Image 1 (cartoon, rainbow, N blue to C red):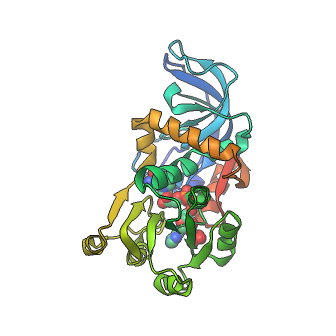
Image 2: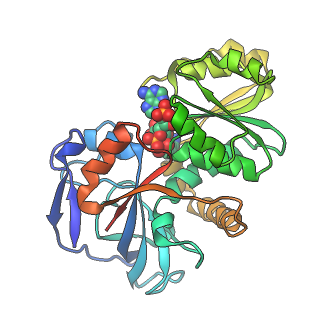
Length: 323
Ligand SMILES: NC(=O)c1ccc[n+]([C@@H]2O[C@H](COP(=O)([O-])OP(=O)(O)OC[C@H]3O[C@@H](n4cnc5c(N)ncnc54)[C@H](OP(=O)(O)O)[C@@H]3O)[C@@H](O)[C@H]2O)c1
């Protein structure tokens, strides 16, 4: 088998592609022949040693894979050899074979191809938890998505639309924002070149009910000013690199709430809830209410190119590594 390995924290260029040996399986685990791996912004932070999870080198990054089960542990009853699955992990996905707990492995619907499935868990799982479990978003509410052009952003647009909401997609690049219209956004706003409040006014939108925030920094602070009565902002990430100091008075005046989501940890703490969420998402997929696509596929051995592509902000939606 082959692994992408970080021997020393650093930029994506530190990654090495090496031949390694298979791990031993435990009673509650499954062995998966990896077909494809999802690439996430968090991988860049993990490789730098700057993510919440800080594995000690040498380690392989990677939060999600798709593939086929090769072997099941003695106590595993919900999976069998040959099942096609997705699996989530805290790190270790950038490999041609993985051993993961059975409870973090989910059977796929037959209609979902493995290269699409690899990019599905983190982006769609996070977006669904943010919109449904955290914001409890309702039909006809207005949802403002910050960082709408990224992997989580595109998934958020699609799910919010499928739930009957009006979606305003915000990002920093006009060409990428055109892609947000294609996946269902009602309006797009470029927050790099324009003042958010003025743009909302131009769209005749006074207030928004829900903000899903992948960006942080000044953009978040500007967006919070437009929250409605009982509004909710869900903090998902800080792609801008700046953690905003949310003014409590803004929340008080609107009877509003700010809530954080750490989906990776939630998925480990509540695997049964996540399983239920995935079943809901697969249902939306089969009804064609969400249509995940990959922006670009790289080979596993070219993982550093994929991460540099993500760092250069060239992607609209998801990047994948093929094992
Ligand atoms: N809390 C959780 O459980 C969880 C789960 C998944 C992801 N996340 C976090 O959510 C964020 C987005 O993840 P992703 O996978 O969607 O990443 P991605 O595909 O790389 O997308 C990043 C998004 O952020 C914007 N962005 C990037 N750099 C920026 C900057 N310097 N200033 C302003 N905007 C910037 C990009 O917009 P433009 O290039 O169009 O401007 C793009 O829309 C990351 O911070 C990630 O760590 C958190």
